[in-house]
Length: 439
Image 1 (tube, one colour):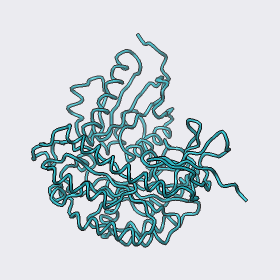
Image 2 (cartoon, rainbow, N blue to C red):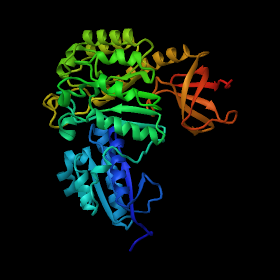
Image 3 (cartoon, rainbow, N blue to C red):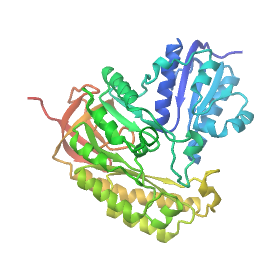
């Protein structure tokens, strides 16, 4: 017996994991809407007839979150809380056959490249004319913009090639058309994403062609900010730096996951670069793009990481003075090269080392933020929350970086607009400021 009235043909899409999954969900939602489904994203009303969970399978904590979400909706299906439950994304690609036996309430599992098959199961058509179109789950003024899928890199700890396959770039023409559609719909900021941005174009054009793509995108009228996420340090195409320096609407921002600060560990990770070459690359980037904000991510507790390796990384973090930094503990993933190594760093030590890195970074962030006090920055207003307008400078990406907080009771601002803001005070990760009156 059903416990509630379900809305027929309503699909609730649940997205877990990274921005690349958000992009995939938005593409799927556009296809569903074109097939006359009533589509919602992570609706709290729980009145949808169908739920599709787009899962993450990158590391242990992400897998656990995805499994818990599947179990929650499997229970809802048992009690009549929904009619159909489908699972897609990375976890499904990697463990679909095992999960189908463990959680029979799921009607079907689909891999990362099986959107047409999922649509067919729903008696819907995959509409090729909609390629590039999405239903944004982000505020309309910014959008994640995937320029390639998959990865050819051999990193020992990473399962992404198992879930996403080989690197496949999207043609420049297709990306420019998609970007123009977004800008016409009100998007002002594109956040370029891929498993590896800097590999872009090798498969299509026989060379790294990110610089050419950036030139075409930055020529689009009305596109105010272009932000680069997930660059790989080995073989970094330095020709993009001149484009970044020359084009005003390319943010002085680069997300470049570096993973470790010890050459010995980097070698075991199969990263194709040393600490010394990494440090030289950072110097080159900062020299050619002055005032750039560099974001990175690091891993603690990789197999064989001894105290001296960790001390190397701490010293390197202090020397490098990253603007933004995230730190993860190593996850021992089956079918990766590192799975053949002994996972010999205890969990509590992994966590303690990650916390120590983040404490070092907090001090760096605080000093850098203090240097911004008294200066004026162009800020994009993302939302109103907790009595503040919440915005970002060009040096910050949504959700993961610093925010600019503006008192909402004393100001009247419009979400999605740019305003000039004078920073009045700063703490470790937030800036507080007042808009400069327009003349």
